[in-house]
Length: 88
Image (cartoon, helix red, strand yellow):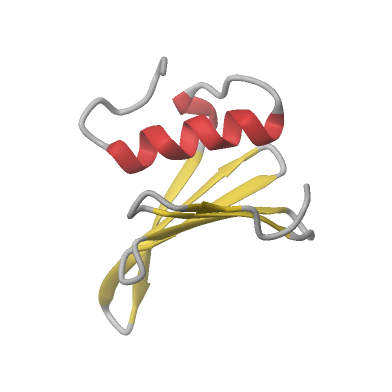
């Protein structure tokens, strides 16, 4: 995917799923990224594109996608299973 960081499979997957949910192709520069820290320890990353947010929880190895002020859209387990948590 254009603009995805080549050595980062999580970032690539986030861009792909955000594109599906937003019905467009996001450019990496349009996606805000931040590191999540809990009690001084790295615990994951957060991403935002338009009205869609994604959170990668490192300990659970799981991505969750949400709408701003809205429902959980999709859970993606990085062991290969994908679950639709609630309809978009």
